[in-house]
Length: 244
Image (cartoon, rainbow, N blue to C red; front, side):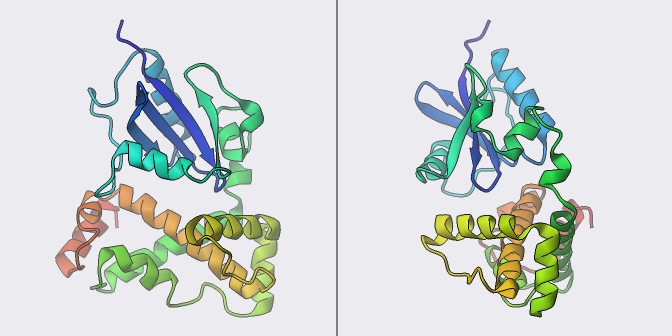
């Protein structure tokens, strides 16, 4: 029987789930996004326990240009208090799990809590805006598309409308999500969390980034042209790969 590789399942403060596979002390394979495909995580863990090797079998995963699995792992774990190991080859650790981890490991029926109706609506809106931008002839650099779509306009205008949207989403979860994102990515908080309009638009910006990267994972053409300027032919190919 093949030697079993060690692994870690990590959950970060944003509710994202990651799988890191090690050969000795070296991270040789790293994938994220399992909070959206929980069955895949269970299948990958079972395969690892049976002695299968992700590199030898050519398991698919997204590796940004200039990165190695080890670099992705090091970047995630460099933020001391923003992640936890919730499972490894020896055991699972329910006491460390957030909502996403408990969902994936079948400890709670919480999928609808994770993806509440407002979250779903905001994700659908974000995807629609990205698709519309590509269809409308986006001609900037693909790596700047998120900025074009989510940083040059507003999701909601008006304090009362913003308050209603935050109530539907859960204002405390929105505050936590924006606070965590900005401190991890910018080192400090920029959004005025007491301003409902600024808070809901910051949340939409974050959700838009997540949705864009999910779409990026689904389009090889987009990934291969990340640092290139967009053109009509490439936009059409991306849309085709996204099923649009």
